[in-house]
Length: 142
View 1 (cartoon, helix red, strand yellow):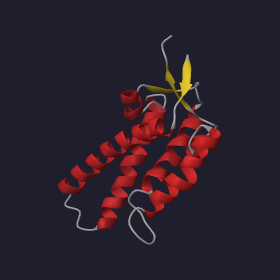
View 2: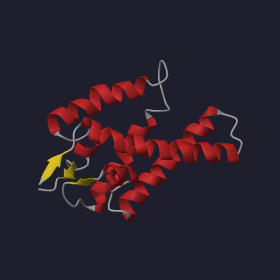
View 3: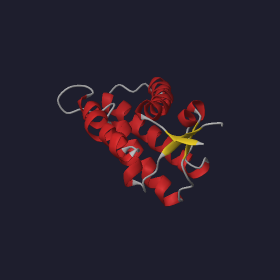
View 4: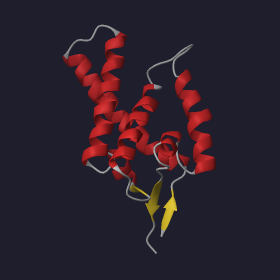
């Protein structure tokens, strides 16, 4: 029996992926001695995009966070839908490091006013909805 994932079960895989991307960005920033925050931001977005697109193309859009949380896509999605999802997911990640008025302001807006309402009302995130109503489930053993 499949059960739709809730907000926390959708958030934790993203946090796991974020930690991985931040770690890789940090290693590259040290290795290349980035002295400007903009270089770190660009590296972060590029690493996130490469990670997300490679997951979409090579791992049927099941990321490390989903593997650890034991979540799956509710059905098979086309490569086009997975690529669109990865691009939107990367854009969503960028709200962690870019801000308008104060740090994390875009992240707060993204999580509280975009992602959370979509999870509550559509049972998927905004980027999941825009990509073809992609939704995750947890497989329950009967």
